[in-house]
Image 1 (cartoon, rainbow, N blue to C red):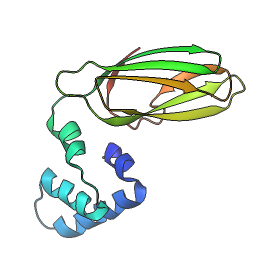
Image 2 (image 1 turned 30 degrees about the horizontal axis):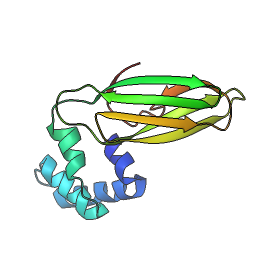
Image 3 (image 1 turned 180 degrees about the vertical axis):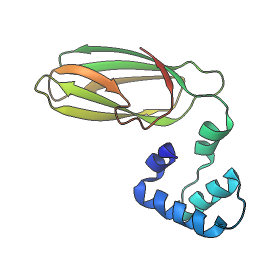
Image 4 (image 1 turned 30 degrees about the vertical axis):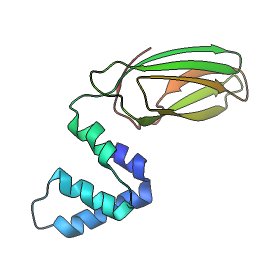
Length: 140
């Protein structure tokens, strides 16, 4: 549910939850009923979301190989799980030497995703998914 809220945004998510409750409060409902209600309320197609996160039976397993030098960070994200590649946004938080922080969102959509990030200052540390928006396994 947390990932769906991130996908839709707070306003559409809570609007969908209210519609779902109103429609099914005194009856049984399935996961498909829930997804249909959220699609209807949000106007978004959630087929890929529900296929990835509800029907595959696996989690994305990410190998994160990064290297930093001054204000540059190069990252190779490799999906190691069996089956198709997942498609999701991955937040990376860079903490700079002056204490400031930058969030960069990477669109992960294939087995291997390579990115080069240029920060506004010298990078002190890196944190993947700092606000815990995704469910995944990782190796660094």
